[in-house]
Image (tube, rainbow over all chains, first blue to last red; front, side, top):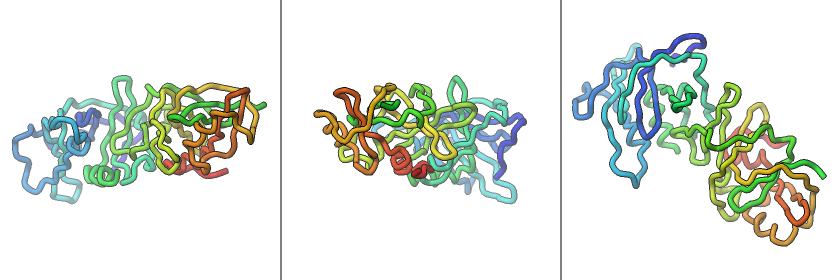
Length: 137
Length: 148
C-alpha cells in the first residue's frame, strides 16, 4: 500500500455515498461508469452505497461506479459504487489526518481524512478493506 | 472541596476530577466516521490531530439501564498518550466533596451506571454525582485506555 506523503499535492477524485464525501487517488482511477453500463469482466465491485444505506430508507441512489486500475502486478480491477462522482481536486498531503484503527472493529478502510469547512473528505484505502470494515461493525 | 466537571450521560449524573478534563467542545463539531463502531460518535479535529469521540451511553456493558444517548457537548481528556472525548450534556464546573452518603434522589440517577465504572460519589449541597472511572469506561468503548 502506498501512502500520502507530507508536503505533496495529492490529486484525488471525490465522490459521494451515504451522505459522506470520499476520495481515491486520481492515478488509481480507471474510469467512472454510469449505472447501467457494464463494468469490465472480472471486476470486483464493492457496493459502497449499499454498505452505507439504512434499512428503512428508500432505495439508495447508485449513480455510478468508480472503476479503479488493477494494482501493480495484478490484473483484476476493483470498483466502488457511488451516488455521484464529483471532480478531480488537489489536496495538500500534509493535511491528511490518519484515523485511529481502534475506531473500527473490522480494520481501518481509510488512509485518513481531510477536514474541511464544507465537509470532511475520507481518502479510501483498498476497496477490499471496506468489506472487512462493513462486515464487522 | 475540590473542583469537578459534572455532566449527565442520559439519566446518570456523573462527575470527573476537573484536572482530568482538557477541554469541553460543542458536539456540532464532530465529524461522523463511516464504518466506525456503533459507540463511536465521530472525531474532532483539535490542534491538527483527530480526537476520537465516543457515546458511552451506547456501551451496554457500562449500564444497568441503558441511558439515552447523545449530548450537546464533548468532554475531552488525556488518556495515556492520546486525547479522547465522550458525549455529555448539562456539563458544568462545580466544587464538591467526596461522600459516602448520597442525598435522596441521587441514588436513582446513579443506579443507571454499573458500579464498575464508578469510584465513589461527590456532593455539593443537595446535589450528588457519581465519580466516573473514565479509563474503565473508555476501555469498554474500545479505546486504548489503561487504568491508572
